[in-house]
Image (cartoon, rainbow, N blue to C red):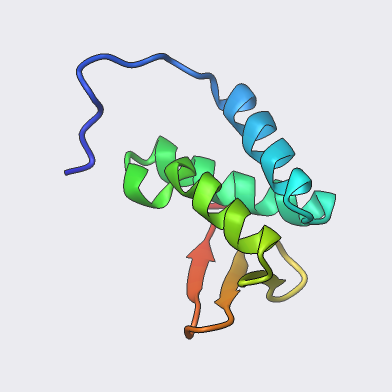
Length: 97
């Protein structure tokens, strides 16, 4: 579990941040929200928790586009965000900052 595949392509952190940010903006998120969720997901990848990282971008973007998911930034600092599904209680995401 959470092991990289035997064959893979290395993507740098800045490239992954830019790609995921662009995906979230295309799905309708504001720029600062796209930046925050991208940072949170890339941080998960960097910690080796790939199951909670950028592999979720496609599903999250589809849910944002379909209106099934919303992002709430909690507080003044970008340390906590909550993903709210219209049919579930939501999931909390924390940064390592």
